Picture 1 (cartoon, rainbow, N blue to C red):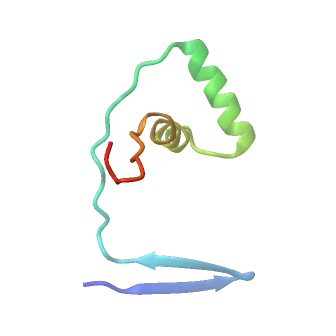
Picture 2 (picture 1 turned 90 degrees about the vertical axis):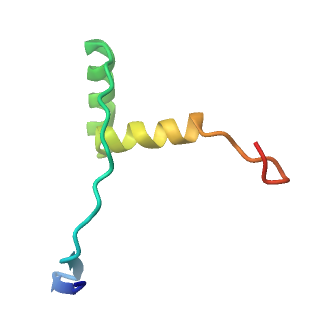
Length: 72
């Protein structure tokens, strides 16, 4: 069953779904305390979540790019 609920408050629209979300499997990453503190300060200053920033950084820097023929 899929239903969407909208709530409008102070010109903001909130979307709620009753459909269960599939959660991705999570892996822990071990980093030094110093690196974590630097990362935490940076993410707090920029207003982003640490896990989301790290995920996007990995995707941007490590994902293999396709060539013009669509191959690796």
